[in-house]
Length: 264
Image 1 (cartoon, rainbow, N blue to C red):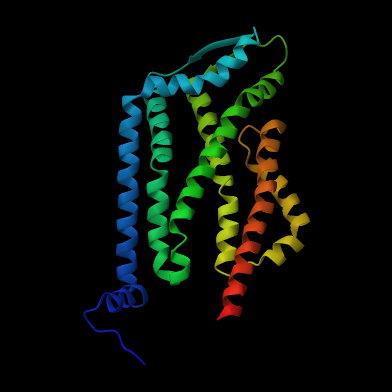
Image 2: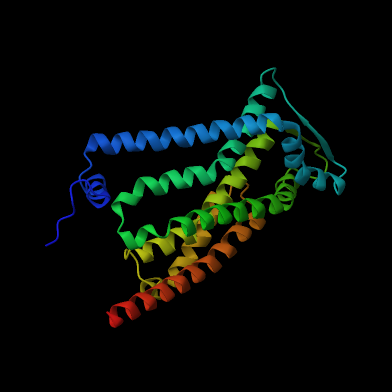
């Protein structure tokens, strides 16, 4: 058996990947967390510089609803002296996390890479790109469905009731909507990854698709922050489509793997 030279890069990789102690793993985790936090801090600083533009962007779904509803007061209000500051910090924190998402995902990937085989490590770039794009897509769907969601929620108060929104409550709902949709839209990335590493098979996913669809709709109903049917359908329908796409990608990858094994 050929033993790699002690000073070679292969030997160093083998030691770093296979012989890391618990202390080294904890040190690696700390490094990844620190880098992610620094990326979030940079994002927060950027958002602080463009706070007024970001707040105006967040107000647009509510302003669109106000144009069609005379019973709404479109001026967002705050009820305590510190609410303005806490709202600004909340917006910048949410935005900072979103801006730092590529860095955070990259740090997560780099942390789990030592546990993967060489063939699985090549999926790093597709993993990061697809995760970021799907998160942005989910956030965009949440943004577009926020106006009908607000209309649904306000309608339950009655026709003679005027709505006056606290800025902190509106920002909280806005952030939760974007986060819920963005995270759930990562669902196909997880399914594809589990198929590529052999935890799940396309055949199993195809066999259980009926149960999967029911679970998807139940999860969408439970985690949608606004609780309205428009947002629930806007979340569940794409996730169902993504489920089918993930199974198809897994099936293609499986056929390619079988072809390589047959050729070998």
